[in-house]
Length: 348
Ligand code: G3I
Image (cartoon, rainbow, N blue to C red):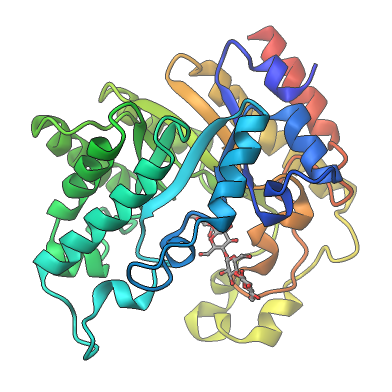
């Protein structure tokens, strides 16, 4: 069986697609998506800088292609992301003199952006990452322009505007490093506040960008359970595992910005040694065991890309490293772990 067949009665098994895939042309990557996955999420093409590069000038060329591809292949389509501080165009926050806009103006811009995008795909995009990455790892609010200009209320407003535009769409809050207890608690409090106000929120997205030593399975599980206890679904929304060292760990903040130093930290440019490949495989299996253990609480597990060559991990914090974070290799061939994950699903 394929991944989507193996997980059919458990949870959706999704993948982030990019412009190489959305045209649907018969490439190896597209064949993998069609065979293995039953849900797609837009890696970049629905972000605000793409959708509304200038105020009032919407460009749906890429997002239309993405949604069409999903519909043609019976995918559960996820929109990512309505409100995010990153990849948002500068005009969103300033007036024509370059000064921060008022709260009222920013709320109006949020509303217009969300309503236009969500209503265009009403009934077709089934779930939206409404707000992305609003918290710092210590559980405090991220000081984004949305926060500094509007305040905490921007969250409930975003959910409300999305709900008004498509009452049937599922609405999610999405963030990374959710296994930090303080961050988890910050998100829990926010969800409770939304629920107390009667605002619809259907699920929490734990992005799941992982390293070999972070997070621990226990910490991830603890957060997963804390979210599930809120009576929302939990989704693993952007899963991948990097084997590369993270520059700041070794060199501190100053060195980490040195491009040569970072590129020297590219130890597997000529292939992943067998012992590392095995460790990576074991790490993947540990996570999937956890997902299967909590399949009653999880509605979707999405990989952040199809094959290793696609991954953002190769290009962050600097471009040009060689990482192995996904389930399919650079030739779009399944890694041995895929069959093992499918085996696991049979047992659970
Ligand atoms: O499309 C332009 C292209 O026209 C240009 O020539 C090229 C030059 O560098 O850049 C291209 O844009 C890049 C874009 O990806 C598409 O490839 C951007 O520079 C690059 O910054 C952007 O990176 C994306 C990143 O979000 C931006 O923050 C990654 O692909 C995407 O995987 C990543 O995804 C995020 C999630 O949205 C939120 N959670 C974390 C996750 C990983 O950072």
